[in-house]
Image (cartoon, rainbow, N blue to C red; front, side, top):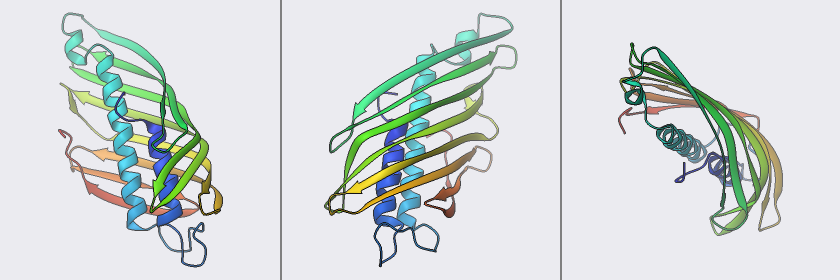
Length: 211
C-alpha cells in the first residue's frame, strides 16, 4: 500500500485526458474518436497501481491461506485503511476503503472483496512542460480469488469518478470516467474497457499472474 495509490491512477488518467484524448481544435475536448493509445496506456498503468495497493494490503492482513493452515473451517477477516500522500507537483491524494477476506483452509482458497473511495485535492502533475492540477473524487470495488496463493478465475475491478482539471496555460475542464478491468489468469490477459470524457475504449494486453 505504501508504494502506490489508487488516486494517483485517477490523477494520471485526468492528466492524460488533457494531452492524449484531445483533438487539434480544443486541447480539452476528447474528440469524436476513440481514446488515443497514450491514454489507454495510462489507464493500464493506473490499474496496475491499484493492483499493487491491494496486494500490499492483503499481505498486511497477516498472510494468505498459509496463515489458516492450523485453523479448521473458514476464516473471515476484514481490514480498513485510509492513507494520504503528496502529489508530484503539489497537492495531495488520499484513498480509503475496506476489504473482507474469506479463507477456506480445506480448499486452500482465498476470496477478497474490497470497496472504497479516493480524493484529489489540488493534486498536480507535469505533463509536456505544463502543470495539470486535479480536484475530484472516485469510487472503486474489486474482487480477487486465489487457490494456494495463485490467482484463480477472473479477477475484476471497477473504478469510476469525476474531476475538475486546470492546466497552467489556462485551459480547464470537468470530466468523468468509468473503467472495468478483468484479469484472466488462464488466458494470461488483462482487459481494460470503459469510458472517459464520454469516449469509449477497450484494450486487451498480456498479463502474467506471477509478475
